[in-house]
Image (cartoon, rainbow, N blue to C red; front, side, top):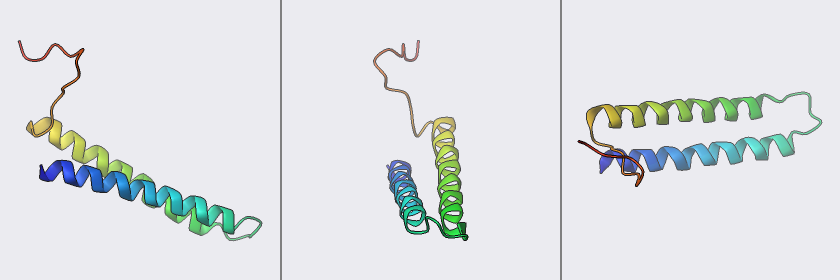
Length: 75
């Protein structure tokens, strides 16, 4: 359950970083300095990479599993 909480928090943080980058891009439009947008997007990419690692860890350790109706399951 702890791993699922971390995944949800990373997803929320990812969306906040994306919104912050959009806000910075809209308010810095026409400005020569666009480093705020780049910094927020770098944070977003880092969070997405961390999310990918956490999901991979959960699948490898067995804490997360597939429950899709089209997946045949263990045989």
